[in-house]
Image 1 (cartoon, rainbow, N blue to C red):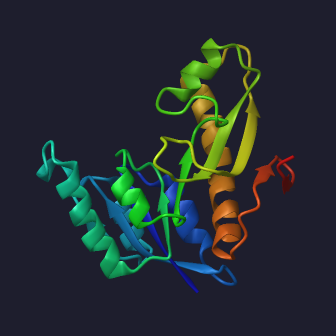
Image 2 (image 1 turned 90 degrees about the vertical axis):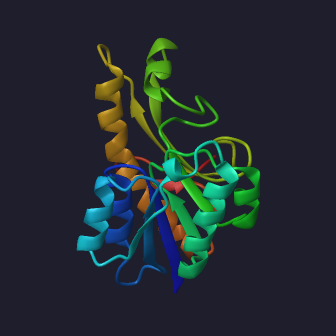
Amino acid sequence: MRRCAVLISGGGSNMMTLVRDMTGDHPARPVLVLSNRPDAGGLKKAAELGVPTAVVDHRDFPRDREAFETKLNSVLEKANPDIICLAGFMRVLTPVFVDRWAGRILNIHPSLLPKYPGLNTHARAIEAGDREAGCSVHEVTDVLDGGPILGQARVPVLAGDTPETLASRVLIEEHRLYPAVLRRFAAGDRTPIVLSTTSESPIN
């Protein structure tokens, strides 16, 4: 059974979908939900589901990312995860941290990578006149949002969409995609998938 830690910064909606899926015949189990913010709403939700929680407040390490990540590593190493899932964790991780957990960190990003790494993805898709938007799960490397893609889900960009309306539809697909990819990844299968409204299939 694979051990999974989930890192969050906010309400933890993606974290909740992962934790709730890691039951039964799932090849992984949640062993820690960790946040860089003590007021993150997802911490209470995780605790209510019986998952251990921890906080490493980045504000305790002003302008010292190395010290922050040293503490982050210390807490993670006690939990001994096989997989780390970033689920709305709003800190950019250094190459040193990524190298420490190479091949074991997943992230979900609200765009169809390689389009629109970074922030404001929905506004950028609308401004570009894209017909489709969506989300991607990828392995984390030292290139921001640039690791191998493990899965994507697509939604149409509708006439009159705002970043908020588009984000709400993409979030629904995030909640379907991330558990599907984690289940496969935890079983040792890195084959990318596209998750449609009715099925999942390999990326061509």
